[in-house]
Image 1 (cartoon, one colour):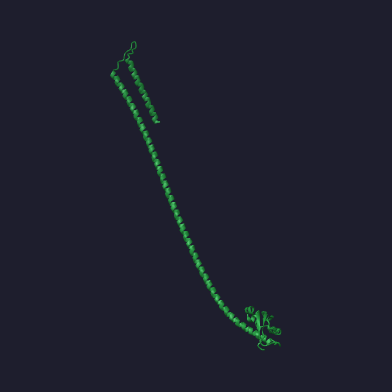
Image 2: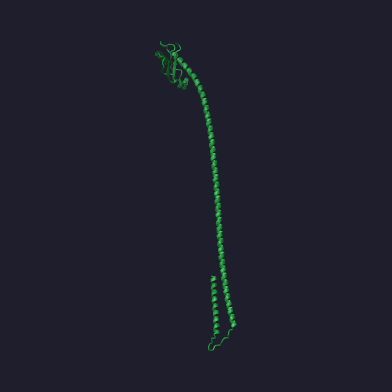
Amino acid sequence: MKELLYKIYNNALAVTLAILVHATVLIIIVLNMGWHSPEPVSPPPVPVKAQAVERERIEKDLARRAAEKRRRQEQQKRQQEEKRRLEKEKKIAAEKKRRQEAARQRKLAEEAEKKRRQEAARQRKLAEEAEKKRRQEEARQRKLAAEAEKKRQALLAKERRQKAVEQELLQAMEDEENQSKVQQLIALIQADVQNNWKIPPTARRGMECLLTVHLLPSGEVQTVQIARSSGDVVFDRSVQDAVYRASPLPVSSSSAGSRLFQTTFREFNFHFSPTNL
């Protein structure tokens, strides 16, 4: 706004000066042409030198004013150029600062991403190491468990073998004892049957037969069957009768033992060969 007013003022001043100059020149021309009224009073003539001086002064003043105007215009131009230069430098500086800030932010982002990746790699490595240790520990525990189970199975096998040996020894002792007892009981049965045998008229020395005897737990004779005949029916029948008369035999479950009775005397073959013929 100030610049506009300043320009209007300068233009008005220049127009005024121009009018004054032209008016002065016109007056001088009219005077030189010698215009005279019918009876005018002629003004004193203006000296030529004064006119020249006045023109020179006016011209100098106009030149000074023009120079001042050019100076102000040039100054305004320089100020505008300086303003544009400063604005340009400011924009360049701002752009430079923006780029530097952008570069700094990118660098910070890259460093943050690098740290994130490094941390992620570290965490993966820790997780892998932990998983490796866990698997190693599981393998160690499985190995220890397998070794413990192997030792336990070996101990059980050893105990079973020891028990089997002990059982075999006991069984052998029991079998030996039972065998001796069986022989004793067979001898008692042989004596009882022999005592209850009635010698048939057809009996001869060397005759023998094999009977299958079924007993009750009380020792009582349930059945007597001829398993192998002597060849003499009368002799065979006399032996069967002697067995029935000897009932109950001395091999009940209470006297011989339940197990021995069930395994040996519940059903057994009795060989009879008389000794008193």
